[in-house]
Length: 86
Image 1 (cartoon, helix red, strand yellow):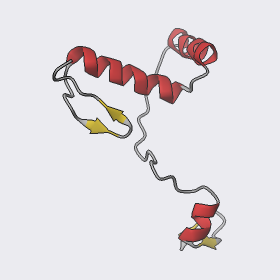
Image 2 (cartoon, rainbow, N blue to C red):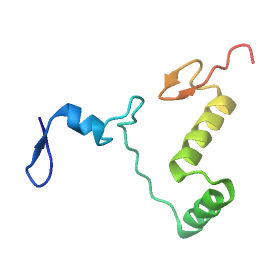
Image 3 (cartoon, rainbow, N blue to C red):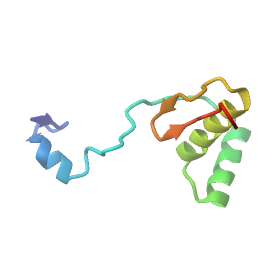
C-alpha cells in the first residue's frame, strides 16, 4: 500500500497505472545553485534545443566524463560512458 499526502492508500498496481513508477526511473536528485546569468543560459539552451535542464545536465556530465576519462566504462542510469578504445 502506498500512502499519499491525503492519507489515501493505493496499491502498487494502482500506482503503476497512474504512472507513479517508471521502468528506468531516476531516483537520485542533485540540487545545485547557479547565478542569474547561468540560469538564463540554461533557459536559453532549453528553448533552443527543446531539451529539459535535466537532459542538458546529463549530456554535460557525459561530455565531461568523456573529456576527463574519469568514469571509464561506468554505467549510470541511461548514460554509458565507454572510453577505452575510442
